[in-house]
Structure formats: C-alpha cells, structure tokens
Amino acid sequence: MNVGEKICSYKARLGFTYFQEFADAAGVSGSWLNDISKKEKIQKVNDIGQLSKLCSYLGTTIDQLLKNDEIEKVEFKELEIIDINSIEDIGILINNVIVLLQKDGVRMDDVLMNDKSKEVCIDALNVAKILVKQHL
Image (cartoon, rainbow, N blue to C red):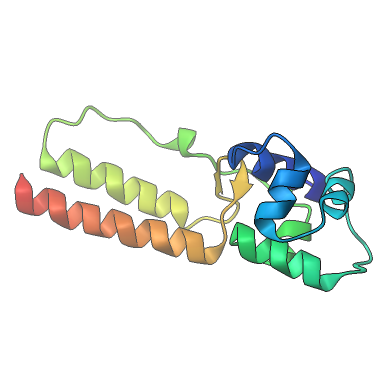
C-alpha cells in the first residue's frame, strides 16, 4: 500500500467524508492532505511539521506512513478455525492469534501494524486468556 492509499484508507476508516474535515481533526492543511493522498510516494517533505502532526494523530510513524509496504500480507484469515468446545480450545485459538501477531507484515483493517500496536494486542490477548481460565 502506498502513501496515498494509506491516507485514503485512514480517511475512510475514521469516518471522514472530506479531506478537509480529516485535515481539521489532524491539525494539518486540507489541501496538503488532499495532495499527498494522490501520491504513490513522497520523496521530498516540504513541511515535516504537518507530516509529524498527521502521524501523531494517526498513531503511526513517519516511516510507516511513507514506506510502500507491498510486502507479504499476513492476514488473520490464515488462522485455523476450530470448534471451541473447551477452555483448551480457546487457549489454542488465542495462542494462534498471538503467534500470527508476531510475524512481519501483519495488517489490521488493511493497515500495516507497527510493533507497538502488535504489543498492545498481544498484551490484551494474554489478559483475555487469563480471564477465560479464571471464569470457565
């Protein structure tokens, strides 16, 4: 996914209809945001401040936003779905998701997950696993 596709994806997922409202929420110029949404890559950054504000708003890094990440996509569809009949089955399913999250190229809502977001998901899954064990 290139930078323009990422911007458009974020706009849609965040529920914005227009680039100007997306830009206002992020604290950047609407025309600037609209302009970069049309690019495949950005080789020269004229206003690092706007790019930094946008990345801060999106919870991503500049590198992740600008990098064309057409690498192998790892999707949750790869998980072997099992019939959950016991606590052991739930534990196996959670462990499979954790293993998947530790791979490179994991995407959520078609956006490449960074290490921090993967760490948060893994922590949440570990807590869920403990809660399931305690209450089943």
